[in-house]
Image 1 (cartoon, helix red, strand yellow):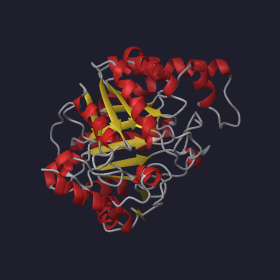
Image 2 (cartoon, helix red, strand yellow):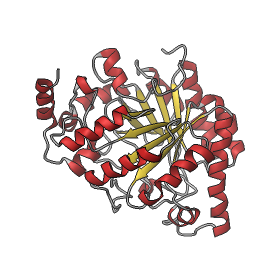
Image 3 (tube, helix red, strand yellow):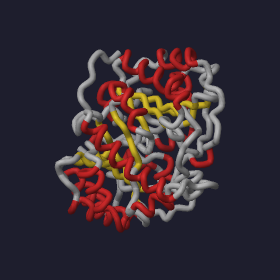
Image 4 (cartoon, one colour):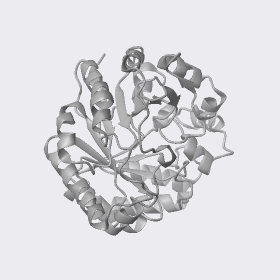
Length: 377
């Protein structure tokens, strides 16, 4: 049990799966993510969970069982709340979100809320002391792009003036939450739509939204967003190299789900990773999905490895199985074993499913692991 929590910083990222390896010699189940709603006031073209969104939430399962399952996770360190838009329904906030966050606070567990920040500020304000990280995906090159792409697959879109107002509300809410002491982290997905606007997006995140961290992740096709224009590895490297030239070094920049790995045989890949590792105020996070994290659906009890439509499907259900047993079973699966590589010299836990399937479908990362152990001191 965590009695006190160190402030989140570049040297303390509780969502970094490698911290469990340092502490216990192996990955542990330390991170649970809850899908708490199927409702959302937007319908983004790039949404990873778009097919799961509904106009009415089902009944939530017994909260006592949910909390019991959390009690059974010995090494629990972080909890995340996602949706849909978790702040959209007052009923969900009162009956589901707040009890989970209060439970986390009672155990000294770090918490993250994934929100689009378009909801009225007074709905966020009562939760400020219960949320350690407010996470937002911010990919908008222009306000018109937000108005179009953010509601692209909505049958009946709000009036254009209202959509413009929601964009302004994102900026204002982020700034106000930051000024109130909340750690706000904005994520930008790298694809061919965001590349022309990265400098504008970064400056907005840092200077207008006052975010404590800018996360940058290459975008991968997943379920609803399966027709995206994905970057090649060379395009990804080029884009990030340019980003490093104009970013504000005073703000923490975190890269995640990178398709460039230390076991690459390409000299430029290794040079690229060296550039990132030497950059000031920059970190690269091992992907927690399937390593330290499982996602739980509060309506069905189904457990999956990620919060989007991943290829594993539901691997179990908490109605009849503990989260720890589900995790232990997952680690014995054939799919997990294809990804279960570890190179201590570079503190790398290998690619996640999306990265492997997109860029390395035929690569044996266990063989790469053996080679790295031979070649690295």
